[in-house]
Length: 271
Image (cartoon, helix red, strand yellow):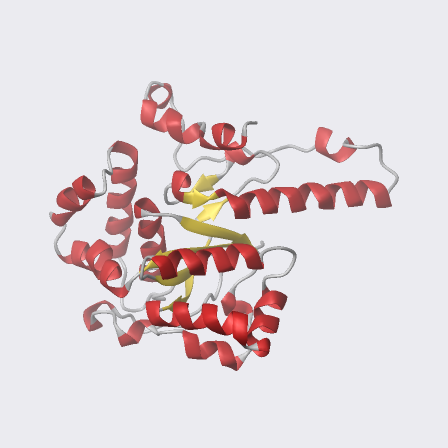
């Protein structure tokens, strides 16, 4: 299984206000939902994410529980950025470690589990966290330090660096940090309106998804060329698996919020 990476602009203060405070004080969800205009479908998903967080035990990996849930919740509130198969966690370059902050440095101690990696360890997991001041520094160093630019350009190859820089710039302009995660959103490149997300699809920046789709179609064409298949032979015989965050029922079809969710990719990409 590949990695569907996303980057989530968020500050330490927001992490506590949007997630850990609500684990302790569930009644605050109503006020927060009102402030950010979360209703119906998304408010329920937010509540479900918090409920999962409350079930986390001290023997769980922090990165696969609280860390992942924080990334999901950020996506209910604001934009996040998708990059297929490339992540800071995949780099062995020690120079990049200087830009990260560990969970142990700022998370309330009572929520820290016994297993914390502070990077991606598998699917459905949080990765590194870049605090606001190091978002600024990393952007500056990318443009001014050859070793940093080379590492990032190599890591985020094939056009993906522009999306990562876009995420950094978005965070910088808002005084936010940047949290890495995987499988918050899982695109279906051959039929994007059949993609799924544990967060809000509307808040996922489309550039990375379009790049993934274009790359997938290009790879299919290359396979056809190498095997002398007729053009679009593979695509015509490709079966797209239908996936949804929740099962669809007749009641769902009557729900305008869920219909809005189902048709998101269709309207966004004009397909």
